[in-house]
Amino acid sequence: MSIGVGCAMWANRDWVGSYLPADTRSGGELGSYSRICTAVEGNTTFYATPPEATVQRWMDAAAPGFRFVFKLPRTITHERRLRDVSSDLDGFLRVLHPLSERLGPISIQLPATFSPRDLDVLHAFVVGLPADFEWAVEVRHPAFHAGGDNERTLNGLLHERGLNRVVFDSRAMFAGPCETDEEQRAFSEKPRLPVRGVATGSQPVVRFIGQRDLDANRAFWAPWVERVTKWHAAGRRPIVFLHTADNVDAPAHARAFHEECRRIDASIPALPPLVGLSDQPRLEL
Image (cartoon, rainbow, N blue to C red; front, side, top):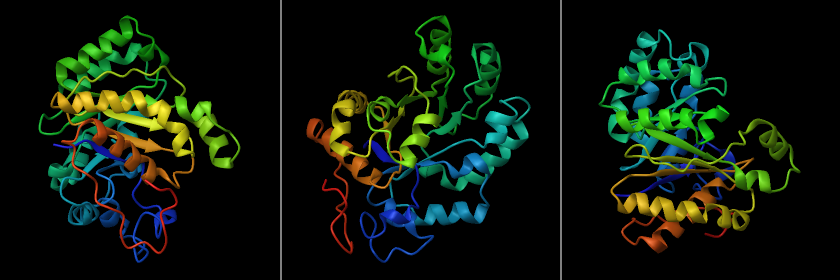
């Protein structure tokens, strides 16, 4: 059993020659990426349900043991806000079904306006979710990060249903520089909320938003290394995604985090080495 580590995408042409082999063709990044990281955030499904043929290509390309953490389409979570969505949900899951053995939790990412007043809606929605998929819930309303009755009610629901709570940690990013266009955009768009490091299901998901400087992130993610290895030792299958404002060196951050976990828990399998590069990786691991 392993932990999952990865990035917010798999097709970043900036990685070709630095983290992906220099001969990686456009459209063929997933196969290479899935051999240097063990999971990915599937943000593409937030914008539209993919064609069945595309899902089959993903299935064929991904390495054994790789996990996709896809988001529900925004029509379900943001436009209809989980109301009257059974037909859309069934269609989405039917398309993803060929990937079932490669799926981590499907992410129910809710808008910041989804508040404690909507908890009854969330309850009705999750009670109807099929048990043959794993699920994770990401909430961004401040009341769910305040440690009071609303958060306890949310966590109780997730514990009861065996759903994972997505943990969002942007402290490293906000402690760092805000100089580039990408950093300025991230500062204006990323949530800045208290961190709730709780595992409510079998595959806890951590989204760590860091600085471009890998070494500057280490002190911020050190508590996550400890917690993730404890979750792993307890039989959970945690997944950690490492972001930066531009994501140019995100694979190096993900692999460095994984290596720090292995120093604590030697039972975590090593990641394959980086091979077929035109020059040295941008960051040494």
